[in-house]
Image (cartoon, rainbow, N blue to C red):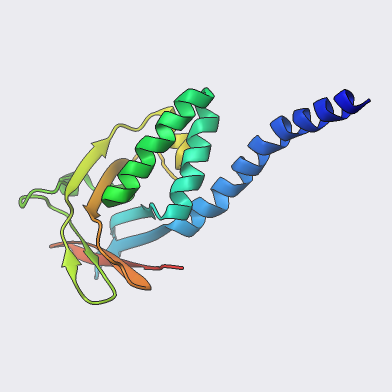
Length: 187
């Protein structure tokens, strides 16, 4: 009788745990992601639409759990992935940027000749340039992790130095065609 109950409880845990992880990812992603737009001031043509997802400690945990689930990682693989992600979190602030812009405006890098510039501003007023801007190929995995990706999107991983952010901070995307600033509050 005791073994049956233990087996039943264990089976329920394996069934319910993925559902809980799935339920936790959606709200965490929505909370970590902000959306900005740049329009032409006269014609209202869309120049840029961008989604920026901030990898806070809370979101990183939800992201790790979701990655483990969708990739069916073994416990050993999951532990290695979690360790790598925790190391990445300790070294820098990471954002995933999903953007659509006209082909003339697609140049987005960490170099000076980039059409779009991205800046992180802390609550104390300090402004930081990114350490890196890396284009990420959009795959079915990326579409699962970021359901707002569409066929016109481009994805980038943007990292900034690990600095104190304060209670709120801003991420600004700017170019000669306009500027968009997103705000996060740190809990």
